[in-house]
Image (cartoon, rainbow, N blue to C red; front, top):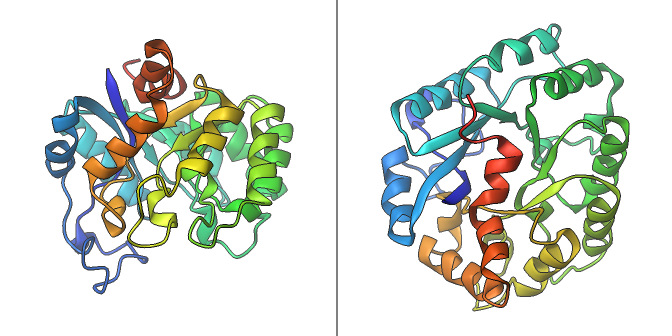
Length: 277
């Protein structure tokens, strides 16, 4: 099965998307699961992972409700305040919702790059290990050294690096991103999402503009630890679903069919436990 391991939906009237502004014309609209399906199904995508877009537990329940209403949503990556009193119990309670597969603190919006290393967060992170929830790491290159430390402290925590840690492709910044991606690959069990990088390139992105960065991810992590996702509809800030699909297929074309299948679906199934009850 081809799986889009990173897409979003939202309802503006819910009012907790602080980053989503009216001037963001392609995005400032209600986005439904069926809207994503209309984009993805043309390429044989049969399921997806719905990822949080607001730092509220209310939105997590909203996403879980969308998953219960659509067979195409195979799993949800939600949010809770990992630093709150009682966070471990909140993790355990949310994990009882059938589709919850992970949690994502919005680290790239937090000024303190070391925030995730606070000792106060450790009990909640261990509750995630206990309940089998994945930590989706929405980070930038400056966070990667601290993510490496986190992985050493919590070896049982499955970390997924969202959007290849959002390298500054438009600025052609290769280091230190490439160094830390290589270390995350070699020193941890983390996996990396091949998603969200077209929006980091200069606009409009030219063909193969992101290829060196994408190839580095694939080389470092190998096809067994890379997960494909669209980041739709945020992707529309840079390009169409078809454009990103074609870029990905060009990148993977030289791989054996088994490896392409792993990147395009089987790795997501394994890492997120999709289909497990």
